Structures are given as C-alpha cells and as structure tokens.
Length: 293
Length: 297
Image (cartoon, rainbow over all chains, first blue to last red; front, side):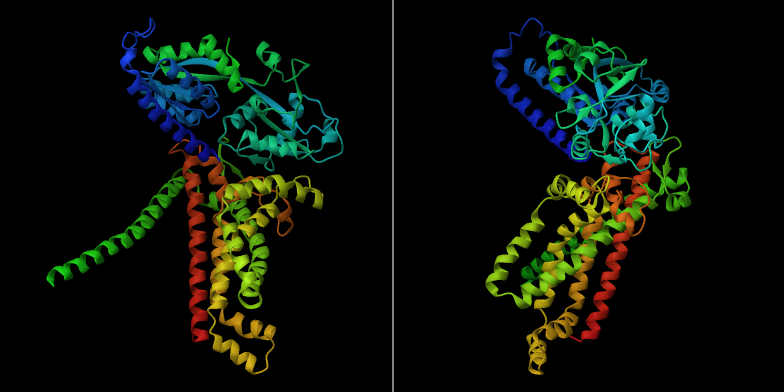
C-alpha cells in the first residue's frame, strides 16, 4: 500500500508542477509590480521524508504556491529515514521526519559537512483504540506494554471480559510503529503474533469490526467506529482529546520535524515561517495535527 | 528484388531485437535481484536466513528469518489450490461439455469479468465481507486468517483455471469422444475416462498457472491475512493469521532505507520468491511434455 501512496503523491506532485507552469505563464504579465513581500527571487526547494508529515507539507506547499506562484516547492515521501539520508547527502533542502534525528545520523551529517537544524512544525497525537463494544475505557502504560509485548493476552487481565486479545499493529516501516515501539515498549520487541496493517485506515477498519481487537493510530484517523481509551500520565488517566493533546497533558503525542542544513534561508525560511503563521496553523488543524506553539 | 530481400531481413531483425529485449530484461532482473539479495549475506549468515523462525527487521540486532514468510506463502497457496482446482475444473467441464451454447455464452463473459477486477478490490471485499464472516462462523478471535487469503486467491485464480482448462477440453478431438460414445460409454464415462485424460496436460498447465497467480499475488493477501510473521501450523494454521513473502516485501519496501541490511533482506526474500515460481514453471513444463508423449496426439 505504501508504494501505491507514493505513486499517487508522485503523480500529484507532477500535476502540481504542470499546473504551476500553467499558472506561471498566464500570471507573468500583471504580476510584475509585485506585492510588498514579493521581494524574494524565484526559487525552488525540495522536501523529502516522512509520510506522516507529508500531507501537512503538501497542503502547506499548495497554499503557499497559490500566494507566491513564482516559487516552486516539491514534496516527496519516502519515510523519515530516507528524508534524513537525503539531507545528509545534500539531495534535499528540507527533511521531514516524524521522529528525532538519531545520534548516528548527526555524526554522518557532520562527517559530510552538513549541520542538521531541527524545527518542530507540529504535533501528532497517537490514539490507542478498541471496539466500541469493549467495556474497557482506560489502560495504563504498563497494561498497553503488556498487551503489545505478549505478557497479557486476555481482556480479563486488564479488567475486561474473558476474551482473547487480538493485537493489531502496523508494518515495520511506518513511523507510527517506530514511535509506539520506542514510547510504549521502550524499544522492546512487539509480540510475534501481532497483526500488521499497512495503514492507519486499515487499523481502524480491523478494530471497528472486531470486538476483541486493540490498535493504535494517528489522532487524525480517529472516528466514531472505534473508541479511544484513556492513557495514564503520572498516575492520572488522560483522555485522547484535542484539548488534552494541545495542553501537553496527553502522553502519546509526538513532535513532527523539519530538518534543514544550517539555519534556513530564502524560500526555505519563508516556507517554514508560513507554517508557523495563522494560515499555516489553520492548515495544520485541517490536516488533523496540532500546532507546535 | 534485392530491395525486397533487405526489407525482409530488416523486419526479421526488428523482431529478433524485440524478442531479445525480453530475454535481456529477464536477465537483468535476475542479476539485480540476486545481487542485492546476496549482499545480505555479507553482514548476516545465510543459515540464519534460511532456517530463522523470526522476522524482526527493525530490531537491534535485526533478525531476518525466512521460514515464517515462506510457510505463510505455501499455506495460503495450498489452501487456494485446494478450493479453486475442483471448482475450476468442474466449471470448465460444465461449460465445454454439458451446458447448452446459450448458457456457456452467458457464463464466459462473467468469468472474464472476474479476471478483470483489480486485486485491491478483491482485498477490500475480503476485508469488509469475508473477514467478519469467517470470524463469526468459526468463532475465531480474528477473521484475518490464511483461510481468508486462500478463499480470495482461489476466486482470483478461478478465471485462469477455468478458461485454460476449457480450452484444453474443447481441443480434445471429436473423434475420441465419438469413439467412446459409439462403444456404448455414457456421457459421464466419456468425460471421465476419455476427455479428462486427453486434456490433462492443458488442465495441469491451468492449475500451475493458477498456482503462479496465487503465490505472486500481493495486495489481496496483504489486506486479509493479518500479516503475522509466525510459522503457521499445518493444517490447523489455516485458521491463524499468516504473512506471505509478497506481503512482506510490499509492506516494508516503501520506506526501507536504500542499501541497508533490511533492504537487502527484502531482495533476498524476492529472490526466494523468484526461485519458487521458476521451479513451479519448470515442473509445469515437465508435466506438459510427459503427457504430450503419452497421448500421442
């Protein structure tokens, strides 16, 4: 499924580029005076990386280029690791990552004369979901860890009905899988018999139709067909709601990053500023993430 | 005259080149597949790969055990063949021997439409309809099982098996059938003792091609089998989630860093898949030749 998504995004990018050429051709005549901010030279930048950050960067780039038709921003997927690798070898201007850069990657970058600078552009919440029929409303970190590492296999062990737990996970290339492993399993192993779905949507589908299932998804994918459980932070249970994630109370939320080589300049700087602007914040909310400030 | 000969020669050359390109393409695919797969064994052991029972590609240290994936593929394919071969051959016999022309004219387009449905649509149908049904009917913890994959794959292999078997059955000379009937054989005896043996090479080819389709199918299997990398039991493992080789490649190739150990491991799995299908085709060829001689047709 990942490759399908990638194909689509490549197609989309191509269409966007074509549309841009069209817009550029017709717009040139009356655009010469320029607005007050339009002092920048026409530039083009490339963003590569996480498919979690991709929808946000894509939407922001589209709106940005509507305002500044002379600029060109291309957004590619590939995954956090691919994005950072591309930044290190200089083949992209901004790396998108749903995880922090690793120490080993910083070392590689420095050896290559690249200084990665981190920008937290938004936050993503992770919801732990069960079937709406399931009486369970809350789970502690320890209980979730037990369910995912295999030491708990029956809902009765966490206060539910006597029913075998069907553990739904993601494919190992997903950033969500990595984050969940780091945060909940503390880098231990997932149980071997966990089911692996190829997308957030597939996890929702599987949990919605199975009353014994548990899964984890990006908050943007939460809908009425499943129920998000409360998760504990410092001993108190916190519900997965927009307010709690925004307030920083909900524990399963992660920053989404841009990485640039040194402090960004020109178009890259302007684009990052745009994401932090009111308009950018609106786009972040529309895509289903949370503003970084 | 001379001009004409050159023209002939030229056309011949063009056709030779096109034919050569397919061979070259295959050669290069093999080369790159095996090379990138082989690079895995520079960093991890071949024995661990072939006999490993755990697939943890992103752990440290990573474990690349082929067995869960290989047995997953074999189990799902075996289940699919078990369902689709009797159904497919029976349908082919009915269409070519028993049904009135009007009925078979009606049935054939429908079978062809079945072949034209994209695999992701099959997968979605399986996920939404079949998976909950299997869970309810059999009282399983989850319906995402090898069985769901087998049923979906058998539906997808059916058009191949039916249309090729039907061609083979229709190609049996009328004289053979008439001979049998003239000797007092009933219609069933004629089909069972004369037509089927005579068409066996074609039917075998149909079955093998069906297997080929089933083992290489990715999207549908990925969506309905749960993708759990555990070595399945046999035969009770048909009711457990499994992960096939194709699903693993599709799931993980999208975001694997190029040139990493994991990347090479996926190529190694791809090589195993390639070798498996190659052996299947070889067997199909052998069967075909053997029966051709026996029939003396």
